[in-house]
Image 1 (tube, rainbow, N blue to C red):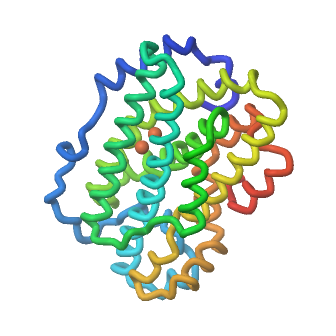
Image 2: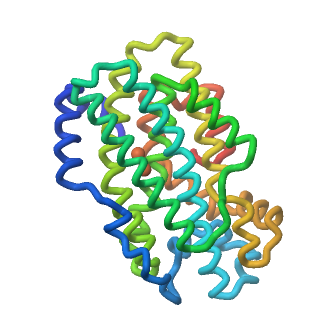
Length: 300
Ligand SMILES: [Fe+2]
Ligand SMILES: [Fe+2]
């Protein structure tokens, strides 16, 4: 789904009909479908080793194998926590979107299905964080408050583009980890569930964004371009909470600085956004003065 996606956008109701059918055929109930009594497996990673934020740094060399794996569990939970944070924002935006539209349409019925999916995902991420006995890696105060504002006012292209950013970078990371046998079975199952259901959300948001953009004026496009860059920047910077480093005895400020300067971590971020950025460029939502934010976040 890179260049040329716009030419394959289907009729809104036809797409929603397909997504509703697929949701009936392939959906999960994580509270039942995951074995929450199974302990974590010794010797396995939370995320693939080469995706840990300190991988390749001098600090990494000071950690034992066991500490590295512990850090990987905390980073897994931190990413899930930021996912949960954004899902709560998204559920509210989708409800406001549905409130104004005709519920008899499949398009809106699918929006309601997506809210139900996100609700189960948030419970799944919450249970995983509890199961791994990590602290609550919620975003920092200012981010939390900006999220409150965004979920109350965002609509139109910024809502769909911001959503795509979170959904597509998580998709890249989770798709890789769900196939990695060095990773915890819990990670792999959580990721499999999320990847399966999010593929439909991505289709829904991409197509709606393509339909929406020709109807926006220059001011709306500029605002959406700015807000998308802002979300991308904030999410990338909050993906790995600085307190995760305390789990292995590293000062959070020191760990955070090392990760932010780590070329491997930058590469991971660019890799996670590599499919989304060309699509958003096509839609004129990446490019112009705000591109600096994408660069500063190491997303392009
Ligand atoms: Fe989700
Ligand atoms: Fe989603």
